[in-house]
Image (cartoon, rainbow, N blue to C red):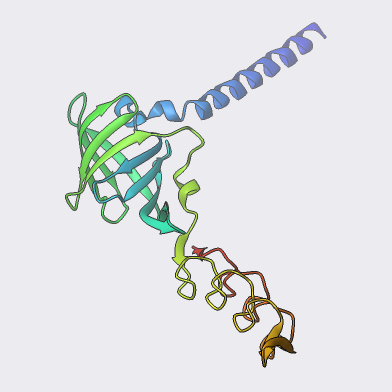
Length: 221
């Protein structure tokens, strides 16, 4: 009986040891990368002189998500326009302690010659000769977070958000909001444009552009 119990305990200990080894192997996936490559794992924001901003999320499994944004104006305020989102793979080949070549399958970024790396920073030149300056972002600030859409300005109100018929006042342009029209020298006749309501018939008195609802445009993916 004692031998039987001893065997059972031995089998249980071996099984537990096996589980522990498998768990450690999963947790150390990132550690399998060379130190130079581990530097790039994470989220990066790259700026260029034209104003374009490139967001990268390099994962330890060799995949990369890329988002391009361009500067645009939304109701007079400068915003980032999401232009495209792509996914691919990446790898890094180190040349020396601070430089190397970053290879990706993203169009335009087949090779990025890394000229310098420092803590949370790198700069390089892309295949097309575009120089990038990269800063590391927070762990939860993924590239995909910045793919919010492209701002398309309203062509009806010229991005003002105002009803062009009443210039944003909400009043009937014929009777100026009184609901009455001159008959002789007095306001006696009901306005035929708004039927006496006094409100703009294009925006129903809201003053907002009926095409965009006052937003001045919309975001489109």
